[in-house]
Image (cartoon, rainbow, N blue to C red; front, side, top):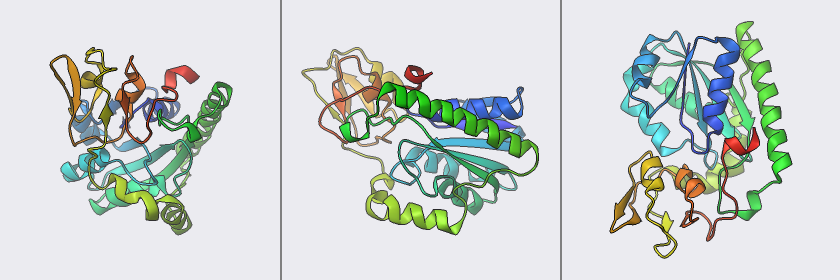
Length: 253
């Protein structure tokens, strides 16, 4: 068994690690950005794949990882974990259908509501205590789902037709286009930027570079919100106009 994940503020990383620990304490867990992730998947009899839902769809970087390594998935058993700040409908089903296209056997799915990562949108913010409670509820759900997997009856959240309809009409029909391509809308306030380079180091797409001791963004943002949540000067925004609250799983444990 191997866990792989893509994560912006740590929710999916945490979920993958906790789930794998409950099922098999010896299982390795890798980011899809890790050099060893592909080899680990090749050696695994079961892959747990965790990712954060964006607008009830799969982030572009995750889709590219799956399609760029399509040979990995043939006859591979996969359990999908979808993390979300609000709603997904068929989060596990979305990635599951993509994996099945390349021959994977998707044996189950799990949806976990977690603290949101959208640092520049006030409407999504919750009190600290509420986010801590969400993480505790997610942990309990992980334990229950892992136990069912070990018993041979894995949960199948997000994998049926009703889930798919909920995802489509709930968000994807209106906002799904936002993740079809990488975004060019990341904004960096040069007056606020202190030139620390944190954003450049964190960006999974190498979309941010330092020029004349200031950060400059390109057109390949995958909307993971790492840079926005970690910028010490709060100089970066994407969907909103200002940083409301910087988020990260460590705040809620």
